[in-house]
Length: 239
Image (cartoon, rainbow, N blue to C red):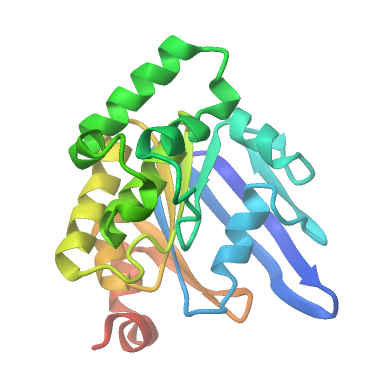
């Protein structure tokens, strides 16, 4: 396997007496799509928040591109090349689509030409956002809001995109569209770390992955290993 771009080694995250992550070690190489499977409350969002600087590990290290980012502020981590599209979208619903996208490029605000180029790339990926650029984000459908959330993260021009539950609450046809966009983002050169409960959709795009249960990595392997694992099939694929 190629050298990891993102590497977590023995990472634990504690909230009071509750240990949300327990000695988690995972990695993502440049150009990969890696999936993190797990039920609600398993620790997926906590792991992503630790990577993006929103939570501090109580032990262990997080390296990105060889640099220890375990204690970096969230905005510094974005500058280093990691962007996070969180579960639940967290859009500014009264602001326009365009303003939401511009906020995603805040760390690049001194490069207006580059920001405009990134916006055109997002509009090319999600043409619907161009058509609704002046509309309030809160008026968009659930699927459109998810595309805006992904687009906003891409405005930072990341090398690694963290996508937390992008299919949650979406109709099957919209899920298919969102996962097609994930493949296209990856084809354009961005690595993707994807947290999902929808293993059926996620394992169509990811080459390998991890299963997290009660804050610990329970299973890891390539796509075929996970698809063939009876526990994964029973819990996440439904067969």
